[in-house]
Length: 222
Length: 144
Image 1 (cartoon, helix red, strand yellow):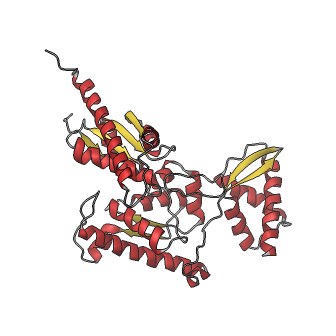
Image 2: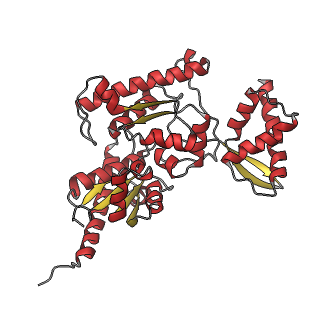
Image 3: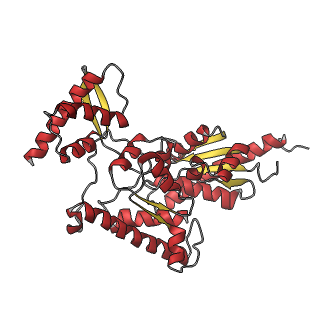
């Protein structure tokens, strides 16, 4: 079943919904990959599990909150009346059918999520990155990453995780730079995903607020 | 403890984003299904991390060999976190550096070079397993 989940996920990532889906590396995610955990907190996440142990769903729930949707392949196989897939290295025909069934269910869920979120569904074929990346994004065998931003604090470069995602959430909530509570809330949210040294919070706050002001300007100019 | 419980545990990376992750899995299958089926047992990394009883028991009671597809070494890190006994941390990238002609491509389906690289990794792991068993049984080289 694990092989079915991997091949179904790859089929969606590479063939059926390229550019609209990314994968999160489960081992890195479970090992403490903060980038991937933060990514799953901010983006709708669909888990694909092979069996009722539901490792992916449970791991996601534990570290990033409940997944948007979940698929359990052996339940899906039973639902479709397919024979049990066999062959970890080379799937048998039943396994290949299970891959297709799983991929199609996954596509339905992806389309539901993207359709509910906005106009992505209306532009088939257009590549739409789910996150802005830069050269410093953390990467793994899965190639997944969360965005990082480099700020200057006290003349020193510091790298902070997930700032663009935090900024977008604040911006879309109408949080204005000149609202005194925004700086405090930005720092508190940033601290969820980053270590901010005790005693340096004020200087981090100023740097984050400057970056947020620049973000808002860019968004307003769009 | 039965001999089955003392089988060497093989814990491969389970990433699906890059060919090296696929090589690590393919090498694990080659060892556990073809080269040393009676002396190894495969453990899924996610089961181990989420505390599945059987996976944890295997790692707690047997020597482990981890196979990782990238420098983050998730499999090795997670077995160490469990305080498992790792007899070898295999990094596919290190093996590739010694076999630059075997560049893996394809994730869902490895190219021939990737499959060859997996077989090279698997043979090295099989040799390590033999050493582990020799050490456990106190065996040495045969002589007259």
